[in-house]
Image 1 (cartoon, rainbow, N blue to C red):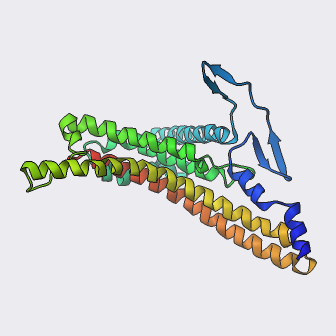
Image 2 (cartoon, rainbow, N blue to C red; image 1 turned 120 degrees about the vertical axis):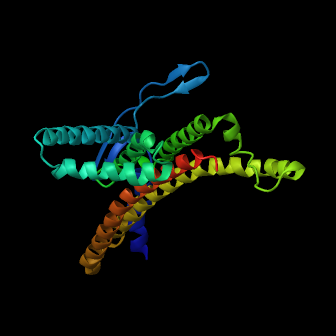
Length: 291
């Protein structure tokens, strides 16, 4: 028992897990590899103090955006060259084109409608690919998952919320939009209808706010939970691997479990990008039709 306590004190697994999942001015996992940088001086704007030092998640956010741009640029150039030679799309360009068409047709147009679906397709595609690459960043060695930061997922959710509400207002007009807050109950008019409509308003407003909240928390929770599990399983090796009798058994078993969890995380990365983009399209589509 004393041996286990000494091992736990020597390596604080909880601290390692939190250090890897939390934002920081460093990249990597100690003691294997770690690169730190100093914070920039604070900026003072009246009573407001700002610090613009890029953090780990900010760096991987820029890397994610660059990879999305590079993917589309390379795929677009390859498609233009193939079509110029009257050849069918193939390889990498064919895979990206198929994915883009699926997001446009089966997610954007299918949920928003043929009239306006194509207009919102670039936004839905951008959300899907950006979140997908952001999810995958944490699976590379010494990488970090920017979508495991609640501030990032909240910003994406707020963007979707603004698009949903503003596009709905422009499509329905002031009177139609107010109908989404003060709903008219079919077959109920007069004072009773007005009373029910006013009573339903707080519920409708809460419903509007719950949608982006669910988007942000779902993505954040799923991306963070996987890393907690993987790093916690890795910690078993360091906590109990010093027992010579069980070295290989613990190492092989834990490695197999971690590989399985990482394969599951690969699936979850695609799934959560799909779910976020799909629900965004659904929410936009719901506001585009007054009923």
